[in-house]
Image (tube, rainbow, N blue to C red):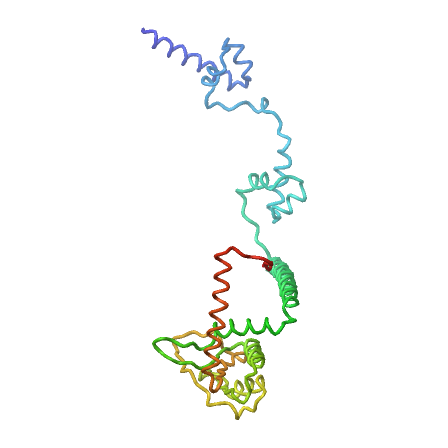
Length: 297
């Protein structure tokens, strides 16, 4: 017999003895002393797969808590409720009861949870809206007292953003402005008054989709600019495209108001010149890095 075969036979014989002693109920220490095995790794190999006797197992302080958690889960309690009841972590509860069926929630409990969620979200929206309104009100107070010079610059920028412009390929030196926002229309009219443009030189026309309440829109814009609806020029109707899903519908939709200044060629040239001066001044500030008196955003 070779040395390797002899060692294997000795190990197997020793394992047979160790297993027999384990099954008789001996502890690891008793088996070690009986067989004179001082190496823990060897003892582990000899006893591999053999469970320890019940009397050698140390009592687990959480066994009673685990059993109670399982009992409460079977009664239909949630993790939160079990945690409050037993004072243990949700992580432990999850490990202890994850093999148990999830308790069914009653319809009333589900509805209460949904109601609580809606109430929390409504409160959050109210807080956000209050903050939004405070910010807007503070900003409004900063600009409400407008000087003539400030209105002048505002009107030039407003016209250049929203008004009709002359093109090299399409000469049209006339002053025509169109917008759907009544506050924008009001600012534009105040600007024309500042420039001493007589109201008699102004003509008004509504532009709106054919599916809207046209008479109501005409009355609305006429009242806004202070004229009779009969003084409006013929309304321009936009044809409805069924494939287009429009969002500007309903009672709040009133189309746009077009305002044209008669004999406005000279005024248009001045507007274009004013805007050129504003743009050059702003460009110069950017190049020079001149930024005194910056407004906090």
